[in-house]
Each structure stands twice: as C-alpha cells, then as structure tokens.
Image (cartoon, rainbow, N blue to C red; front, top):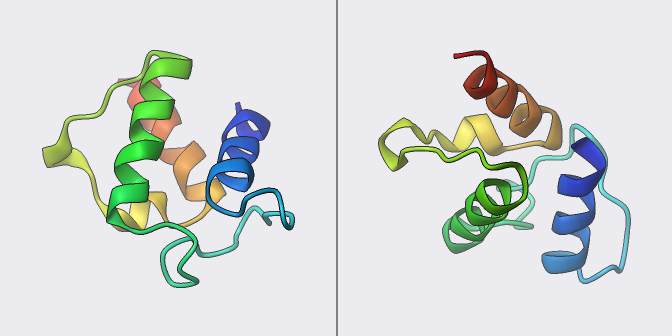
Length: 78
C-alpha cells in the first residue's frame, strides 16, 4: 500500500523527478495542494476501496506518507 501511494505521488505530483521520503511534508513543501488532496483521495478510494467523508478530512492527517498510511489504517480498523 505504501509503495503504491508513494508511486502515485511521485508520478502525479513530482512528475518522476525525485524520490519521496516517508516523513517529507507534502503540503508545507508545496508538493500537494488542496486540489491535489482531492485527487489523492480519489486514488485511494479507487485503488484500495477506502472512501473518506470530506467532513473527516484533516490536512494534518495527509501531510506525510506516514500520516496518510496511519489515516488509512485507522479507517480500515473502524
């Protein structure tokens, strides 16, 4: 799961130009913006069949690759 999400971010937001570290801040560094978050959420929904209600979305929960995985895992554990 982690590598699929990493590859999606690298290909779609970094255009394959460099690697993405697990704790690299996605929003603070400008890699992803609010529209990018919507695209990422659509990818997660389509790829892993995990949908998230927009009311439960918090940018801090998607700021790094590790944060994204924790958020997805908490959704799976519900």
